Image (cartoon, helix red, strand yellow):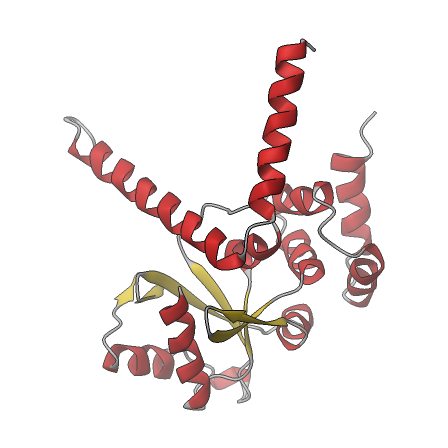
Length: 170
Length: 52
């Protein structure tokens, strides 16, 4: 994945993407045990107008560097990479406040545990709730920080429902 | 719960904690191995007679 992340940094250096961060299962893997997943979710801030947003320049850039499209992803050094625009306020904040990491000499950014939990809660599929539960059980997040994020993005009721369904069991 | 099951669950918890504590690149390599294994299984399933 080192070379994959290096290519994403090249996209940034070329001005095709703004700030970016690893999210999804590979983001969660930073804090939890390894999670089986097929692709690498890269959340990206685009500085231009969202109305004219297209991923074509990214795909073209990577294609010129020998990375072919694979379904809705681009295969970059063995990893199917999905570029996801950080369009909502929550996603944008998650990218902006991501942690800087060094991945075997390549700089990368990973969303915080608290943002990953909030995004999973908002996404709301079964596997997302399971992931939030894993974060809780592993005590891998800061409660105050998480509640701040949930409050800012109108997710307190969703968290209450999650607690009632999965944490406050009789 | 039997002592055997209790011990097994405790060992699982310890294993998960050990995995969580690994450096990120190490975890990524484990994910890559899981992905490769998943692909092998998919390929094997496709080769089975009568598979779609």
